[in-house]
Image 1 (cartoon, rainbow, N blue to C red):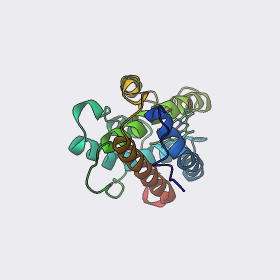
Image 2: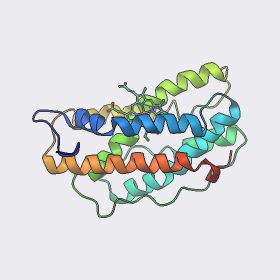
Image 3: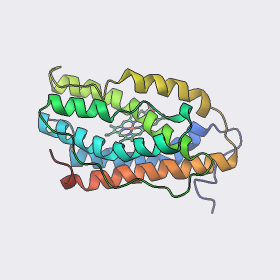
Image 4: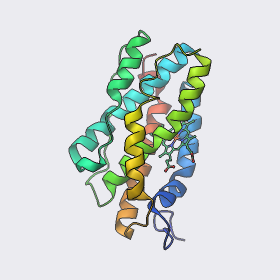
Length: 193
Ligand code: HEM
């Protein structure tokens, strides 16, 4: 049976393919993050930000080292650290290294898609955080306009079919990013609240 990686239908856009291939992983991650922290209280929200910071530091490092300029989303860990400082929390230690071995065609694109696409979820979470926190909790990260602007620019690149090798590389890399976030969410004890 063909795997999801090789199941890129003719004419299907890379975005549609990536979303289908990682839908289950995204659902798992959504649940894992709600279980690990959520954002129902100020302490939950600080833990959520700590988890995000820990997971994103090595990913931003990977992109800075391996991705071409157009595929490097604006770093967000500084914004997260600023939110944490406003909540009176120090930035947490980074999560373990992120690696996918030797970069392949599509690797940077897949990682950039996950990082940039997460701004869509962040936008939805920002609305909830504004409501729950009565507008008093800092949202430099969740409300980051730079991330949304990068996302809009990336769309032209992913809303069209990709060559099979690029689609496969992007899918493997995107799956690795979701696995990395899942590992961070599964070990919240490593993330001080
Ligand atoms: C914390 C819980 C999370 C929630 C509640 C959430 C929610 C969402 C929502 C509402 C969307 C938009 C769906 C749509 O409009 O079709 C979305 C898309 C997405 N999210 Fe999340 N998300 C979460 C965590 C994450 C994380 C941690 C990442 C990765 C770092 C991530 C990556 C993505 C990607 C790649 C997309 C799809 C972009 C596309 O449409 O091409 N999400 N998420």
